[in-house]
Length: 92
Image 1 (tube, one colour):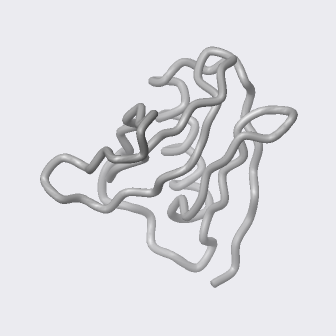
Image 2 (spheres, one colour):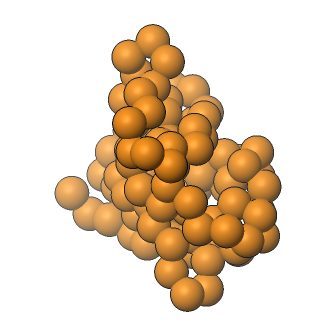
């Protein structure tokens, strides 16, 4: 697996974050990790993987117990939403 890390802005809304992830998945491959860094959200993408069939949905997951609707695949981590670093689950 060859990965690439890409950074996004802190001030993105939840829908902007979903669009940011989807745009990078279409360009580089599927999201395999997400975290907060000093400058903003950092996504790790698998350059060797196939682009997911549908756009991601970001679920706020403060307790770390969320699950993806319909049993879909999820990537847990942290992301900035409106300038606040929060726990999220990114579902496809």
